[in-house]
Length: 150
Image 1 (cartoon, rainbow, N blue to C red):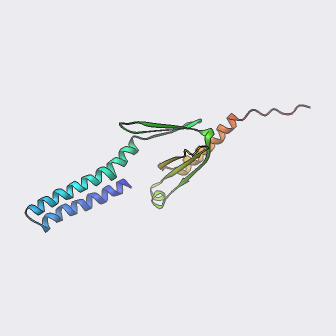
Image 2 (cartoon, rainbow, N blue to C red):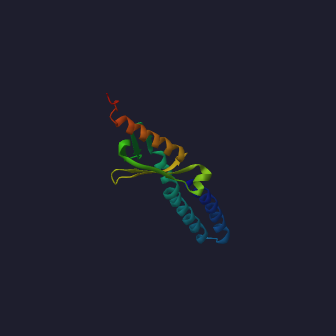
Image 3 (cartoon, helix red, strand yellow):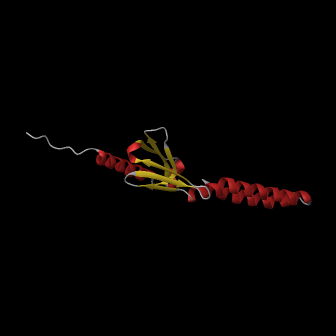
């Protein structure tokens, strides 16, 4: 979404910047252009750059025993969810997500501390693999079954 917003912002901002100078002259024209430029930069920082930096600085690691989430550029935060605590794993793909091959992965745990990972590429495959890892972890934790002796 930030990429689409960047494209719209670039075209609309350029059009408004150039058109404003054609519509108004003098101090109103130059002040208006600075206001358009300032608003464009503010929208760029808040709605394009910030989400990109959050995405760029986030790490999601799925091992055969846990899910590890790390995020933040300056201030770091982290979270670990053992596979044994997971109750359900499901995904959600929007129309745009189907076109661009991404979706949201929801992991419900035994506690109320659920994990939502947004913008996951190939989210269906990730959900299937995570479910398989969860089943393998359950099998590993289950005590061995010995055959009954006669």
